[in-house]
Length: 481
Image 1 (tube, one colour):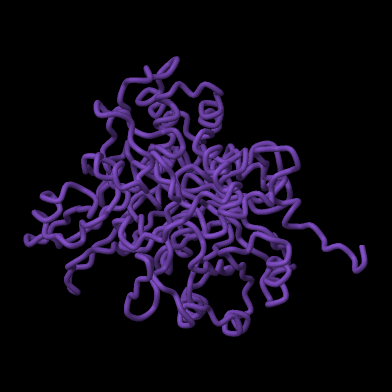
Image 2: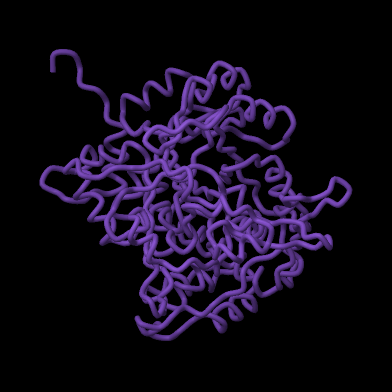
């Protein structure tokens, strides 16, 4: 498909999943195969720091930092976080201050470097396009991480889990190295006291750089109403990824009153996206949520889509950033039909439903959840609220209950909440080590997890990104064959 700017659009977008599940290795593999590889933009500052603290055994991170446009910044990042030979396995990762609306310069430098490193490595050695995925709900690190991705030549920026109307203008300003400000989502904020998040690239880089290429912006949405509003009121929207409720990770809440069936939200006709209205916008779109088959790809294209976004299949392939042991356990159980996915309405502190793979030893198990002491020391999913004195406060429904309620949070919001931040880092082998033991992981996947066997070559117990793409692009057999 040729898009409105005269360029080819990928048939397959690899989903930007978790924290470093969609790692640079996965994105590079997919892009080298002619499709759109996507890195997750979530917590890349912390991912960079912990990879360096583990000694960067492959040398990839330090190689990427040698290409950062300001070597003084790269050297400060290395001095602060690199541990020669790696930290002892029983030693805790050093704490890093949580992002706030007024982060220190060093905190912003780490986020810029994190975005740069992940995208540089994903793009290294080939000419295929690479994208980066952000959650709109995680605002504080986004401008700095996005700027780092732009410095590395990112080709697509995808944003979901909210209304990303301010992102295209932010991209435009950052490509010109100009300061940006974004409206902050602040609970209890007064109309006459708006809050903004500011980021100035000129405080990061000492030298003047030429303008950067402008990437394509894709909004990840779950309703035609939002697509129409963005297309009409937000300049710079290239197209849309339309995610259904069977996709992994965070799901949009059902429309109307919440109804639960066996503890899971019930989605109905009101949650189906009117594709006729999407087509009328004249912008390319991709469909996501249980589309990982050649038949569903062709169906999507017959409905006017440029192609599909696929997450779960890539999340468990060889190049995924997921801890290999976890990946092997999930694949084995999925292929034997012995694993399920639960759409948990309570797990995420954001309040959005979150799909959780039911896997022993992870936070999906009641005993594991109850044994973990509640804490919030990463803070990516914290809610920002206005205190009585007009200043900003930060709280998380997954932090200790007494802390959350002391900050004015409703007690009922704490029930069943899980520390998604720490758990997702554990899923990729970067979890904090504590005296009580390592942080437990949490694994998310779409409803089609049970179908992983379709990607498995005969006689194998694992599969590659190339296997996924070959399966999806397979042509149907001719009649009678």
